Length: 182
Image 1 (cartoon, one colour):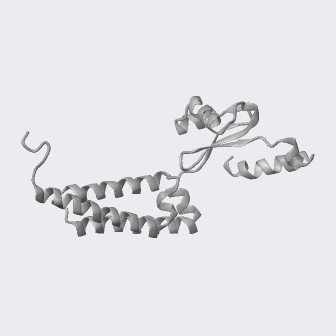
Image 2: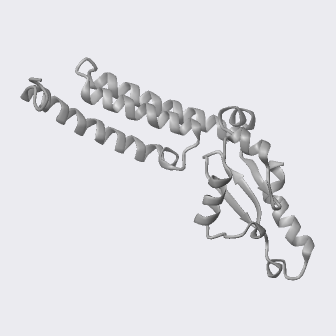
Image 3: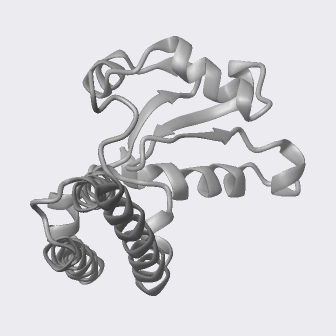
């Protein structure tokens, strides 16, 4: 019980100094690495973000981990994330392997139970996404897609005025966004 509130001034000073240095490092490297580091996270980006947070915390709190070793591990993770995402952007096969594919979970008035079960989604979660988008009727929805970043995207049915009276254009515009997922 002796060290509940305070251990010693040297330990506290080390933690404060290391915290400032790790904070500056992560802010700078995140800025340099671009929007990908702070965008909507897919599984891969989420894992890297958690690892960077864990390494930052370990570097700050554990005296057995020197600052240079903690910084090196954080920089290597950022480099690996950059290389993997760069390669994924030029290789569709690698991208399919590393990232999850979007999946339609509701289409033309019907919930798709197999897709919902595979993605472990409930009807309530889908309805919540509809409400947050201001959609109050299933009749107004063409499809709902569970995206790679775990976001539910609501694709509204096109209104008759969107197609300027041409029903074929309406079907084509919907199918262009949904067809690759079917």
